[in-house]
Length: 378
Image (cartoon, helix red, strand yellow):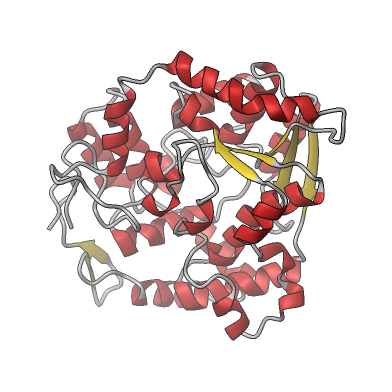
């Protein structure tokens, strides 16, 4: 395990590759951003959008479709696309089951509706959703392995259904996070999103092997490249065009327009600013598990951006990571365990079997201690 020389990104992030100088892809990209002509990029975007604007009113009611959760990124995208670019977007929200979705998340979607947006909400069958979450946790110690298939698949599926070829997405995970398999022909081409770590790895194969029938898995099927070609779908990363795209900035923009943020403490959530994954809370325990698998969690992702923006020193970031990178309130673990039908002790038994032995020691008393030094590695 090695750390980026600039931030606290470890080389254990899936699909990531450091430069020969020891710089992570995200820091390498950020350095190149200092020389970008943002007005030129804006003009590129305007040129791209012309063909879609011209077709509105002829055979389409909407210029584009945007996947939303009501959170900071999707709220900022929706407002910028409508109020700055002059487009008419259809917002697509995949809803969590009642046991999982937060009141905060419902309020944030309601806020987008009150702001005047057209929103279509899809909701996969809750019984299948729950059984898939249990199967995902049992096989991968990652309850979101199945739900993320539905979350990412819903937008292109709805784009096909409503005949909207332009899909606007937020950040480019290849450039801004370092998931290099998602890189497309250009910095804004998102049609290789299907190869990101979240969506790759066997697709529905493991789900079929777990006994689920294909007829029950329609919401979890990402359209094929042939589907994209047939319907002329194009994903464009908006983050590539926005020089001030960041977690904190997006949170401030969205909060100014009515976003309801998280109130729980960082010691329970690892959420330094209370603005991430607002529509549900169990992602908190998945971030903790990610930490035990790869040596980094939610706080690392937060502070890396702050380091790049010059708002936090590496030393201060190390202190926060050491304190909170494995943060997860026991109430979230308890409610999740009850939902998928296991005990808290069974939850921890499964987590300990997934701890990366190269990075952590699983002690006999239940404690999990790291072998690496934050900021240094092994």
